[in-house]
Length: 81
Image (cartoon, rainbow, N blue to C red; front, top):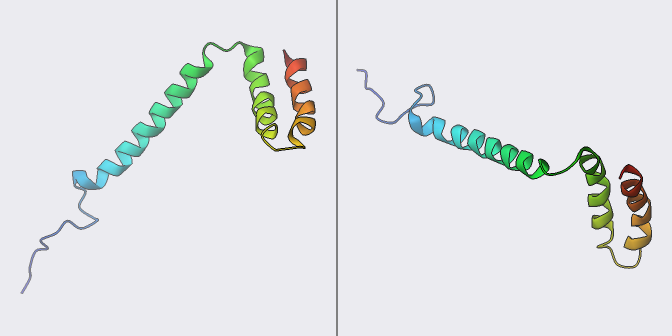
């Protein structure tokens, strides 16, 4: 006696199995486009100096030692500009 399964199995590709992958790809594409749009107004030098500025700003959050530790990163950003 054979019975057919009433539920979808992973071997059967129904739309509900494809939906999470599609939304993940659309989310990644949207975030890449947003990042590209944010970088458009920046000049070439500003794009190169951006990691130095982010590291400097992140270090400056740390109390007492943040500002002295950020000095080399500020110099890096100034040298690039």
